[in-house]
Amino acid sequence: MGKRVGIEVSLAVSEAVKLANADVVAAYPITPQTHIVEHLSELVADGQLDAAYIPVESEHSAMSTCIGSSAAGARTYTATSSQGLALMNEMIYIAPVLRTPIVLTVANRALSAPINIWNDHSDIMSVRDAGWINLFAENGQEALDLTLLAFRIGEDKSVSLPVAVNIDGFTLSHFIEPILIPDQEEVNKFLPPFEPSLKLDIKKPISIGLLGGPEYYFEARKATDDILIGAKKVVVTAFEEFEKVFGRRYHPVETYRVEDAETVIVVMGSIAETAMTTVDELRETGRKVGLARLRLWRPFPVEELLAVLKGVKNVAVIDRHMIMGYPGGPVGVEVKSLLYDIAETKPNVSNFILGLGGRDVTRDSFKYIFERAAATTAGRKFELVGVLA
Image 1 (cartoon, rainbow, N blue to C red):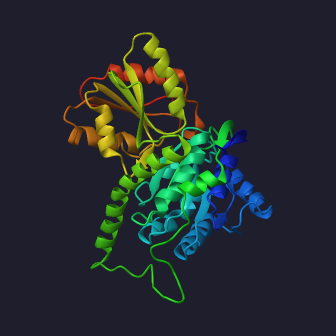
Image 2 (cartoon, rainbow, N blue to C red):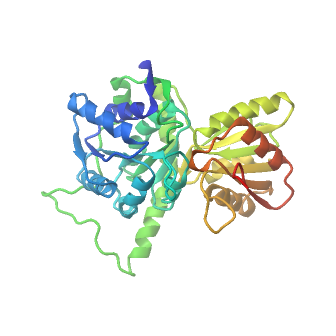
Image 3 (cartoon, rainbow, N blue to C red):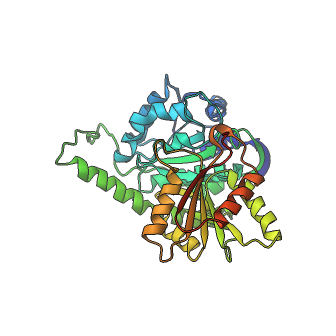
């Protein structure tokens, strides 16, 4: 049944990689991700993880190494943050099309400039269309669990895509929490050895990453998108099987007190727990409020979110990233489009951006958002919360 220990969340992620028996770890330090690869170096050095630990010269090199090792049939892992993910950008777009099921932890951090080491979601949103499966954790237990799930999902032969597990930098990565570390036997039962569909093999040579001219490129991109969208079935199945082994169940969209809610906030990441305490406080005053948390960001959980928000009067979508030059955030734009184009009933949708660069997000922040969302009339509303005038 495993053992519950007090451990920093970053180190718990490293323990998950050890339990997954990763073959290759490509490591480059960047705040606030460094503790993950630092602890993995200790696990490898101590003989607790039999893996090739490769200290590379940059994040670009880290992802290049991951693509090569995954293509050769190795279970592959790396981690990064902020400008590190930006430096990986060239290779991030290559990994999905080459069908390399790399697992990447992103300790979400604001992109420069100005230089900022604290949390928001601007780093992962910069590559939201790259073709990676994206999962979001709210606490340390989820960070560990989703890391194991990421290997299982990405390595499924019908998927074979890279998976990013997002954990909020500092506000999650550096906190010590009581986390249940599963037994190796349990993990082995859930996560089979990696058996790639195609791999580089000198005995059976193949070529990957060839030139895709106008006559092939479009179809290659569509094929990757088709696989990514189809991967949601595998995600759901993996969530179900994870529950059978470990007793904890995840869903593409998680809800909190939405059954009779008139106003629902849509959110991702660790601030969801603050939002849940706010829902409890407002429920005590008779307010019909609830929360929808996106566990799965890519592929986007269209049907699940529509089902949760069906009949809701007001929807407030939270973003921790700004689309420069457009009044909104990426999550807000997508949820609005979904609800206005597909939903049977059209709720009043508001989009709020807050917490950029690590600015505090409190219960008062969510109380304000609930009030503003409930007062919204028909039409699209957008607001920056907590920014100085």
